[in-house]
Length: 211
Image 1 (cartoon, rainbow, N blue to C red):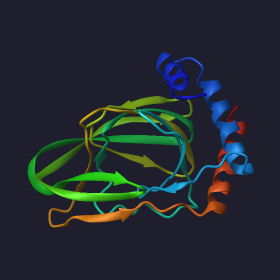
Image 2: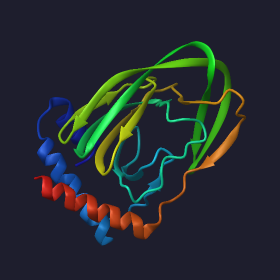
Image 3: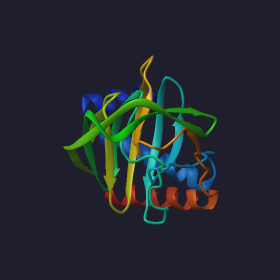
Image 4: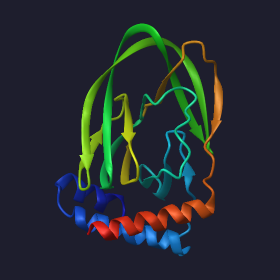
């Protein structure tokens, strides 16, 4: 399956079982080496397996206790420049939404990503953020996060999601960080290939057990 087909199935609410089967087969191919996929260790604590890139992108996200804890230089609060549509394939996930008001608690950073490097540029805007429940999801749950919505995601233990992203022209990825933090760069490191294979194999097994 590719972006258009996955998007149709998730938005119509039909065929999530077929999407889970496709994800399991894709993970098995990654684990066997038949499908080259370079796992990216994300600062927010998961491994991203890019499946399709373009204006409509598809990734598989894998959370595991084997991974190091989240280590963002700013904070877990962020928003995307693209619309997110996701299906939780295994585990439990909660989204916390952030409402921004004028204040001095945190600074808004613009995140410019290129060639595996994030450049974080402090803006003139400082804010305070209040949290609101964005929903808790278990296997089979579908959720959306429109571009520009600040949020943070909470996952305990193992989880697997398929994430679809649709670019919105003119938008910016943003993060919230300490007011005194300056401009800096963060390299999104490639995950250890052996660990990526282990995680892909484990995720495939979990999806097969859930069927």
